[in-house]
Amino acid sequence: MSGRVLLDREELGADVVAAAVRLLGCTVEADTPDGTVAVRLTEVEAYRGADDPASHSYRGRTPRNAVMFGPAGHLYVYFVYGMHFCANVSCLDDGKAGAVLLRAGEVVSDLAVARHRRPTARRDADLARGPARLANLLGLGRAENGVDVTSVTSPVRVRSGPPVDPGRVRTGPRVGVAAAHDVPWRFWIDGERSVSAYRRSTPRRRVGG
Image (cartoon, helix red, strand yellow):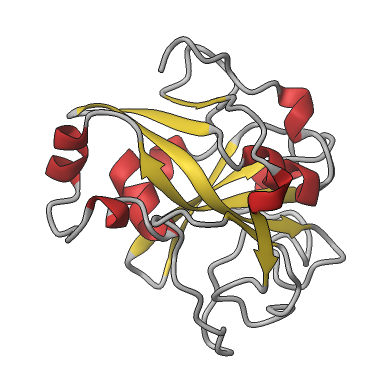
């Protein structure tokens, strides 16, 4: 895993849609109390700033969403439903709000460590299937909000993977947002078992970055 280079910040400074597609197939690597856990991203979701009513940054900068305003390549971690953490990677130029929600992935590190961290998972494909499970597996919480995933010294790193075959990239409506849920900015790799099941949004739910 360490042989893969870290994703370049400039690749994340692109528009949120381009950044989301680029993150597919990349690996998120986190140092946890149980050891390093790595997840190859198979599903992500893009959110932009003032022109995206589903985004946490839609109404402007706050202490909670400040990481979304850049620079690119930092984790935006937030608590949702009073139960779970979810994690995004900031993108766009510094001062412009945008982020990509990490929705699901395939464990590519020691499965024994991953199963120890997520003992309720019924299958290996469920270990990081969904944004809350992914964040839980990687140990992402308030302490990781703002960390630089492009730095070799960071406790959470995103390593570059080969670009996914465009023929395998699928797109569809976002999940768990009360507004703009039909915007097709959820991207996934076709045929991957770890991709989460689609459930149409309801007005009370909000998951996006």
